[in-house]
Image 1: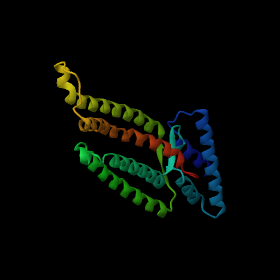
Image 2: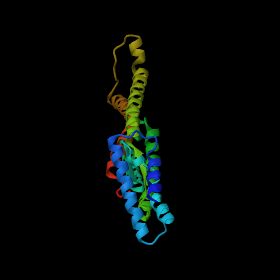
Image 3: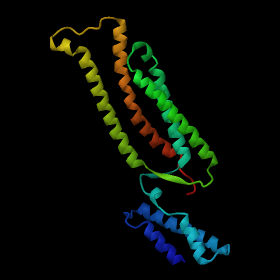
Image 4: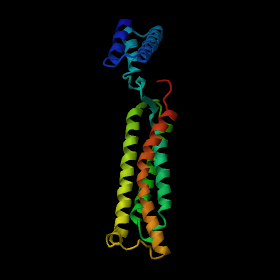
Length: 225
């Protein structure tokens, strides 16, 4: 049985670059599984049943690889949904003046819908977390998330510059073309212009949410798997 267990662990780690750190983890996994196998045998289980129960505990080593964490699935997802809810509510409140200024009303309504969806997801995940009995988690590839974070910051920045460029082009394009001085006719127009320029900042929510997903992985790291 122990030879079968060693072959099973070898298959789990097959195809991985065997660094010193990963080799230590492999020995640790084999040692823990060996101890578990002995416990099952001491309980009177047959060798075959003890082996099946032992290997059932670990069917993947993804959470042992560098840049990967195994997290409590419902707790992690619930906190991420809560963050999305808070972000959406903040933008919704910030866009309340759109009712008076007449710009950005679509974003105000969109954030209300997003808040409702995130709130519903948060409540459902909380109930699932409290009712969970299996203690299972899932793996989060931090290296992949960090890559997404960089890409979403770049895309959000590009989108922000494009939207500002379009807004300013529409507002001042003719004045620049004909060489007229740039001017805003009054306080109301200045408020509308400033508010219109602030609305595109909402595109920063996505990279902020991805950054939060990276940080939550440390807070919800699964224990005892």
